[in-house]
Length: 536
Image (cartoon, rainbow, N blue to C red; front, side, top):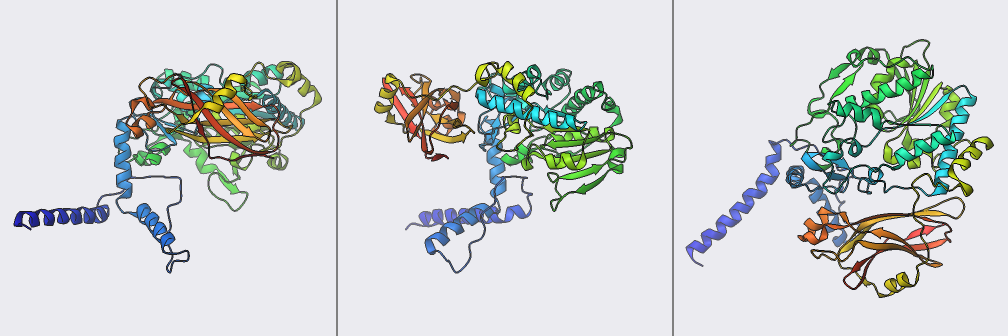
């Protein structure tokens, strides 16, 4: 070996050792970026190994990978570079235009785009539950409202991803309030209009890096809500924004999506927040159980005398609007929706004059699900009004309705038989939700691609194979998936995403297998899911 060769290897080994040492030592001086992965990191494996050396090695690898000192720095830096290229480093975050981030609940902004739909019987049960809750409160001298904050992508559609063309005019958050009003089932207050007006007036109602509205968005919603309650003679009217104090949250403000990506230390955070310092000083909070975080059931005594009692079932959007509401009530009973959207125990115990269920737009569909939170039964008169509005047999012709899964016709059956397994696809999510009378809903999403510059056709169908054969429903596989194109380094994979939601009129008990099909050249390709869906 020559002297030059030996020097080369020494320099190479030395460089590697220096880099490894830097990776371990640099975090001692360079602060790690904030990151919130929403998962539990791997624990250190126990010695001696209980399940063999191979299992111990795998656990050790996972532990080292999760606890490598420079790991947060590398994740944050890589995801920041991805953001600049318009690509997300998390399946829960969508990178939009101009650095804006949007939350992905696995439907790819489906609630805003109108992809989240409801079959007629489900709409009937939803309205019936609303009427039951409304009548239960009315019988006890109270008022019940459903309050729905809009998602960020309907307020700032211009900052959405390039494949998002804005909110659908018939989305559930618009259709369900109309049906509730027409049938007299109850009040559903969708807060899109006041928040959109404030946004058009130049107020920053949402921030780039968080899911939730800012205090400007919450204040616009507060004004609309208190105006409505005041018109009923239940409360005072809203107070001016000048009554509240702006608080500088610095770099510790709400930034949940930036934290998911680990980039919050690399971006400029701007989240306007207001508080009511006098009301905060007067209030006294009593928790109703062992939990003491913000999601725990709790009672806030505000120190106000002679004002109504409010029961607020809520999600995280309540945190910004609550400071504005403190001075309007003598007592506010708080319960998180994760513990049930309807809390009859709290209604009976505290006898509120006003009960509000606040639920973000994508959660509206399940917020009156009888399987999740049983509600008081509606009166016969209320059910008659609902059925009159929805039409014969309780089918909701006035609301978005899922297409039915049906047995395939001859051409579709031939396509199923001839389809070849796709090499480039993933049926990422598939769910089967049985109803009460044999019906069910089926949803599926993912991607399937030919990986060619110009796909043959976006048209295809989804299938569900079970004890009584195959059921199919139409689907389009052309939702933009820049992550697929990036992963395969092939622009032909971009228009490959699909989301389907279907109604099944009668579902036999048993195990079901989902699949998706799309055209490819002169034939068809298919992608079977590895999910095993069970109908009881």
